[in-house]
Image (cartoon, rainbow, N blue to C red; front, side):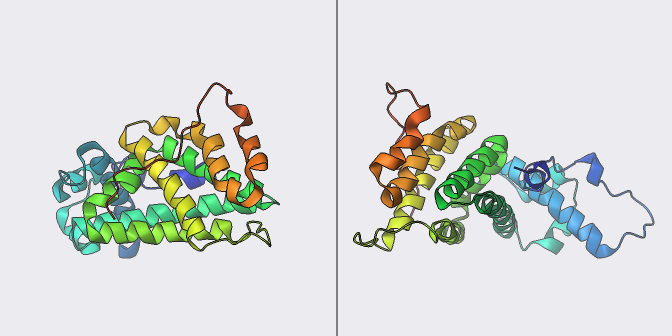
Length: 244
């Protein structure tokens, strides 16, 4: 996983990162460059503020203060707090999917690619716990709009199953991929909501098994569990209280 890609995700830096400060006074910096700079800082500030206070308790003033950006500048970029959250979520999840797709395409076979994409997702969320909290848990606090964005994101994971092997004599219902993606998401949600983000990478064997078994069979998929102790019971992709 490229460090520079990780560093572009919202929450990877502090909103008031000195490296992005724009000096006061006369400047030849184009307005669009200033706006882009402020937008990035607000993305980072929103992630950290929401992770710390919860979306319901975070205010526009809190976010602006954490970014070192004025309220007028905030409202020049976003219609309000909900709009800023959705923009941050879209930007961050677009980047996450790009990192996952790069890992997937770097492998020559579907099985290895699927595992690589899953591994990098778990690693990114573990390394950026504030982003994980915002993108996995707090997005629900944006109400119907947030849930619509989440559903849109989950549908985009279909791309990682387009090249999965299919048995000619075994029907594959359309809901299969949706069920796999939903089960993985529910497990990740449970860990993030419980403050166990750093433990996500350890789920790779179990989640790989859950992902692969419908396509390669139980015996082959069970090889993914080989790194776990036989005495351990694999964590199941479990239910969680996500609003429909």
